[in-house]
Image (tube, rainbow, N blue to C red):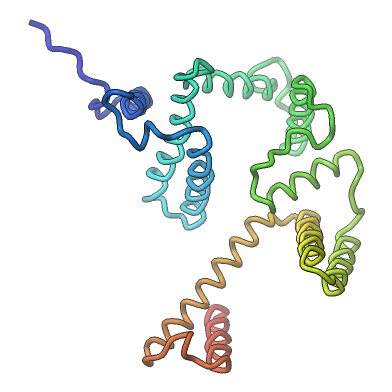
Length: 270
């Protein structure tokens, strides 16, 4: 008598097919998990963004022992959406994989077609942008800014909007002009006379700072993440030293905290 085929859910080497089977089981109305059954496109989308950032964080920290798990968590979000698509008759995981495969082949004729590979990375980037523009036009996205996703983090979206506008010549000529614009926006913020005006001018200032970062070749999202990490390190050092003497930031004077903050800065520069 032949052994019954193994349930793919419990196949330790089942790979993506195992994960797809697990998701289908979790979403099964009769025997699945109530939490997973309740999930929708909208409820899973925020987790997808969060997991992408956790992947980036693991890479930035060179936490290679964590990266495999973080990548798995991100892949799980794609599998969720594939399951939703399957249930609604829209698409399945294979369709997702085939769509991106077709896109990669179309965007790399120098690898998968007859086009010459004798080009620089910069030339390939320009060709890539031309190809993406053609794809947007084929989807009916004729305007310059069409297709820049609304759900991107604000700093990232600002940079993409500016980059897209720059391709058609709507841009400052040099970083010095952008820096002058930043100074101008600071003055306008200082002169704002109502909460609504303050918010509006603050947005203009941040947009100008993103523009300056772009002209200087700096990723504003990455730059702010780096500063966030730096602030956290220094403040945690300050916090720890206060607690070591039986105090805390809430109890310390401004002068004490300033002295400890400067000490933390000096320690990092050694």
